[in-house]
Length: 144
Image (cartoon, rainbow, N blue to C red):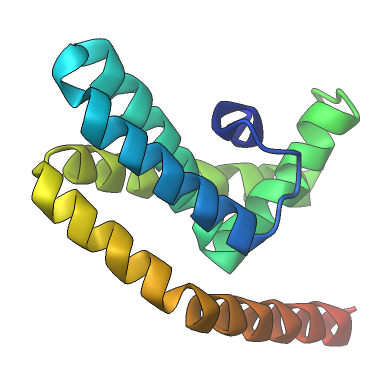
């Protein structure tokens, strides 16, 4: 499993607003450096895959749990719950990878428009993710 925080150059368990800001900055760099070759596009796709995985609160929560098991504890043995998280995270990664490839195909103008929209709506998105995180925590707490 890839360490998506390391790919983005962010500390582990970064918050949504940090991830979104970093993605906007990476997209701006990609727009200016796109002409330099396929390796720039491949790097952008990998970074965007990380963004798509970590921007969604449910996907991020699953990834963070699995990340803690695999990277922080250096454990290769996963319990049943860990195996479930791993399977779900693999599916999340597949979706994120497809989205990243689609994003890399956009023109510079389309990417700039998208970044502008992300910047405009980042406060709303943050509030929505906080609410989603609280609901997920309550659901987890009640299920115990």
